[in-house]
Every structure is written in C-alpha cells, then in structure tokens.
Length: 414
Image (cartoon, rainbow, N blue to C red; front, side, top):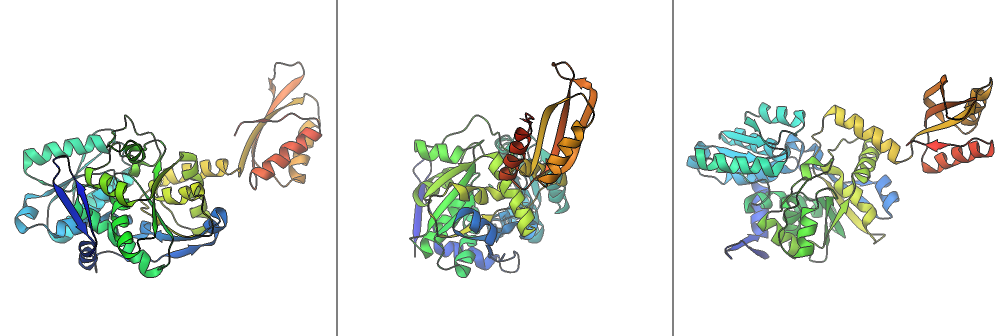
C-alpha cells in the first residue's frame, strides 16, 4: 500500500492511501459515468505526441466534481447529513454537492460568486440546493460559506482541500490507467488543486514513472507561484476566462500533495484556451468550459515529443453566449478570421480590384464597409474595412502579400 503524507499549519499528519481512492471508486459505482478515453488525431498532430482525451465534461453533472463531493458526503453520519451541507463553488463543485446531497438525503446550501455563469446557478438549483450569490470570486464565496457554517452548524464540503474529496477525484487516474496502461503523462487542470493532487496520488501508486502535469491559467497562477516559493501564496486577483480555475489560494493539503507528487505545473494564456476550445469543438464536436480545456492548451508547452499523453477535460458547464464568444475569438487567434483596413483612391473600379484579389486567393468576405464619405486624412482617398474568412495565418500572409504587390497598403485590425 502506498501512503502519502502532508502536514497542516499545526504539523498534524494527514494521510491519503491508494486503498482509500480505490474504496472511493467502489462508492461511486452506479453514481458516476466511467467516461471513456479516446485518441485525438488533431491534438496529436499539433503537439507531436500521442494524445488521448478523458472527457469528464460528459460526466454526471457535467464535470469531475461529482466524484469528490459524493465520496465525501457518502461518508457522513446520518446526524451530519441532517444538519445540512454547505459549500462554496464557482459552479461545478456546487452541482456535485447538490446532486450528491439529493441522492443521499441531505440538505445542501451553496454559496457561489456573483460572477458565476447562469447555467451553473440554475443547474445547481435544479438539484434541490439553496443558492446564495456572494463575492466576486471563489475565495469571497468560501469566506462567506465558512461564516454560515459556524452560524448555522452546517457541515462544510470543501471543493478541494479535503482528503475524501481528493480521494474521489483520484478515481479518474485509476480509470485512465485501466484504459491507457502505458501512458507517459497525465495533464489536468489546476484550480485549488484537488483534481491534480488526487490524480497524482493514484497514478504514482500505480506507476511511479508516470509524469503528472498541472495546467493553470496565467491570470491566476496561485499553485505555480506557491510551488516556486515553496509556500502557499494568495494571489491578489484572478483575471482569466477560466472561471472554474480562478482560485487565488491553493489548499494546504493540495499544495503539499502537488509539491511532492506532481512533476510540474505550467500556465497558459486565455488566447491559448480559446484556440484549444475551438479545436475541440470543431474536430471532436465536444463542448468544454474554459477551465476544462486547460490541459489541451498546455500540450504546446511540453518539450517532450512522441509521448503517450492523457488530457483530462474537467468539465463542460458553459453557457451559449460564452461558447459563441470563444468560437469567434478562437477563429481570430488561429487566423481563421481576418479584419483589415486600407485606403483606396476615390474613383470607380477600386472596390472591384479589391474583390478580385480576395476572390483569386479564396478569401470569403463576411463584412465590408466602403463609404465615400468616410475619407482619410489624404485628399481623394476613402477608407475601406473588410472582414474575411481565411484558412489560417499562412493564408492571411498570402492575402496581405497579394495586396502589397498590387500597390495597396493593408492595416491589420485583427
């Protein structure tokens, strides 16, 4: 049996054994879906590795969080369940706790940041939980939930810094290595650290040579900064589209486990998240939330090639408006949408020349703004703004070069 140890601020020893994760897997039978791992030709080609995807966005409640929440609540006594469960969450843990409490006959109260997408708020309420909106981020909501815990006598279900929760999340690694026994890497999102630390404990117990990589948003790198400084760091702000991973302070247990058993934590930009989201939707017809695609975005940061890598898509709870915005921004980021302006002589036939160049180079016009009354600072010149669909950055460069050869100067807008 492999046992891993951490210490809290009072130097009390806390342990998590592989057998506890295996026991959690038994408790979850019939409650969760054992989401199947599948091979991704697209991400494999882009990264130079053999990439597999574990789609927890298809999980019951739409994310991996049900695993830890159900495992924790199922171990409570009847008296504790009657007192009620309180949790703080940006959405996915909320739904996990609400679902688990409903299945196990307990009352659930969830404190969610005011910035939580409406789809996650409504989904949590549908599982019978009472929802309280408070604060701008998870940390604010958590502080309020802890206050209510003391006032009302609730049982606090921590979203990540709880050994039973971590054990539940670790069941993902068992499923992965049952299917991809010779995996070299597992990549998973990092918010508070419950997912990555649970996966690390389980995976390292099964195969000590496997590498576990956490992927965190650049706009909230609390775990990476904590590891670099060898102490828990509370970052001042969380500025990222990956709201599910916008945790300003890692947990004590998760920090220690991540420090000891995770090989590396890397960060990615919001632009890289948008691109990964677009590829996942376009090539695999799968919709994931921003935090869910962190591992896919992180593939580009790996130096190794030819490795067998499993990426965990942690969740798929995302609203339609956000999906539309991500697709549009992802298209721009990958050079699939090109907007430019140029100055034309104010005489007939110039717009036809522009159209002919675009047609010759297979650029599909989406929008065109040509107005004789919108003149430039130069006499007898008008401004033209065009938005076209393209095939990528090389295609954009080809179009710009074609206009330059014809004597036109292009000003790229995006």
